[in-house]
Amino acid sequence: MTTSIILGAGMVGVSTALALQESGHQVVLLDRQAPGRETSYGNAGIIQTEAVEPYAFPRSLNEIARVALKRGNDVDWRLGDMRRLAGPLWRYFTQSAAAPYARTIAAYSQLALRASDDHARFIEPAGAGELIVRRGWRAVYRTPANFEAAAAAAERLRRVYGVPSDVLGADELAASEPALLRRLAGAVHWTSPWTCRDPGELVARYAALFVARGGTLARGDAMTLQQNGAGWRVLSEDGVVGAENAVIALGPWSPPLAKMFGYSIPMVFKRGYHRHFSGPDGPRVSMLDVDNSTLIAPMNAGWRVLTGAHIAPPGAAPASRQIRHATSAARELFALGEPIEPTPWSGTRPCIPDMLPVVGPTRHKGLWFHFGHGHQGFTLGPTTAFLLAEFMAMGRSHPLTLPLLPSARGWA
Image (cartoon, rainbow, N blue to C red; front, top):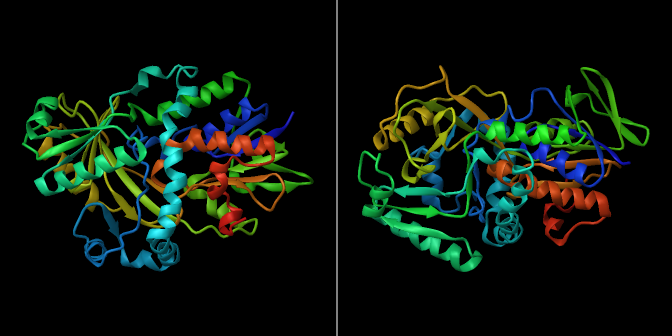
């Protein structure tokens, strides 16, 4: 029986453990915390099958100036952090040009479109059905011009990729969301995505399924990973764990571990913030106030208000501008109560400059990469896990995985 250690117990790592287990591996899943308690805990909880085109770096001078001057709430940054991030950001800019971006979309769109089907392979066996809501989510717009542009973009996605949506005018939106406090120009209701009322709990249920199927959870430090003859070993709280394969699935913590073995991974770190609020009235389905880069999601813990991206390296101090603005914007739309947590949560999205996850083998026998999903680790974790498991089982990749291989991008 093939043995594997998975380093990282977020959505990507837990999904990898389940997929390899289904392929016949004996698997140990190791993390310093319980499954789903880091980045996977704090996202918007949307399995985004409509997200067929990843977030590109702005290319127009007007958009770059808007971000540089912090005129919106979608992006925040600090001048002192830019020295550490300049190289990956420049690569992100160049990979967002028309030709490379088109190549990215060709692979990325295929991943997104199958995401809910891949989650479905885990949801019911994990007993997690009550966490999932199959009613889509809405992007709402405050100005007619932005709403009309969004409606046209939604029609293009329907035409090109078959992504379904409903376009709601002001009256239809008001009828669909009776708790709204103000009239908006309209909304695009993305109807195919599923939402989750507790993302961290969903990962925990997947991990419990992994254990029920014979897998082992271990607490330990992934940075203790070492080659051990023809295999790999890592130190857990219960002692040394050895296996033929090791999969680095640590999200934003992956580059430091990869660097120990000679791999330099460029990564753009996009921090997000959220806070839960009490109150009886909020959106019926998750709602993104696009003009304010504020998402309000119904969660078991309350109304989760989420921000855009703060470009910040690991270890940088939290910032409050985006969550303060998001809270104000959310309260313009709904009568939210008091915050539930004393301080906002923050977590980092691991974004690769070409906007594709890193999935595949390295030049070290038995060492595999599976990270860099950017904004969509929660969505794509099972999908890329099944692709990685196929690669490891067959010794070759499905055609879809070719643009995702680390070797094809010079990193392995």
